[in-house]
Length: 104
Image (cartoon, rainbow, N blue to C red):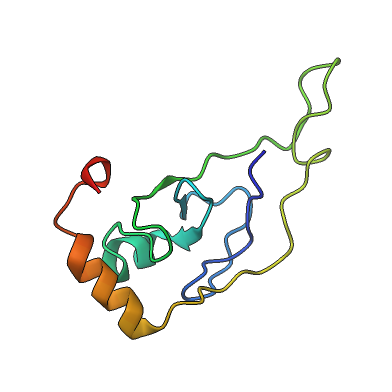
């Protein structure tokens, strides 16, 4: 199950569970749309992969036999921050930005 991290790991913008501005890589590194598009240029600074919009978890449980929805599976409250320096991010982005994520 996705953690639904609460913030952009680069600029620390709030990304609540219902935010359409949240983007993740396959390891759940979480960034806001402006950072993904402008700073990171669709290159995850951790794994080098690309990003996709984070799915939205419904608030309510619509199945009697399961405990689903945000009310039963809340989003993470732990704020995560990228461990990479601005220079390290720029170097990786420069190296990989011209390759499609499936080619990396």
